[in-house]
Amino acid sequence: MCSLASANRDERHWGSDAAELDLTRADASHHLSFGGGAHHCLGAALARLEARVAIGSLVKRFPRVELADEPAWNGRINLRGLESLPLTVS
Image (tube, rainbow, N blue to C red; front, side, top):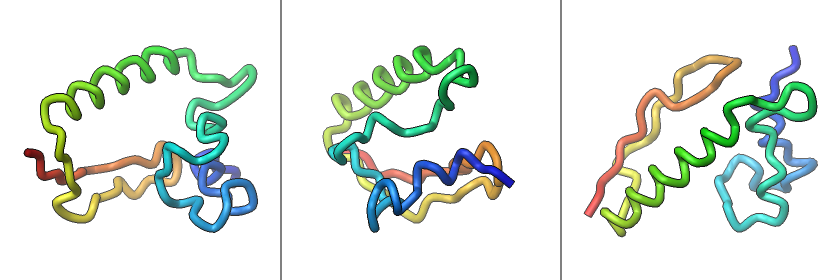
């Protein structure tokens, strides 16, 4: 089975810490989260805008955001994502 979700965690491309979120990583913008070419997600621009507004607003309102507990994943092979992300804000 081919899984695009695994592409962003390829140690051959991203290095030994491929599973870690690192926005300062060289070529961080070259991820495959929205597909590519003819299969590029039509909603990618809207999703990026929504994320920019939501995360920016959260960080402005709560400058200190920390992980309160381990995240829970939804367990899917395709469309993998978080079931919950417990945070502590102040």
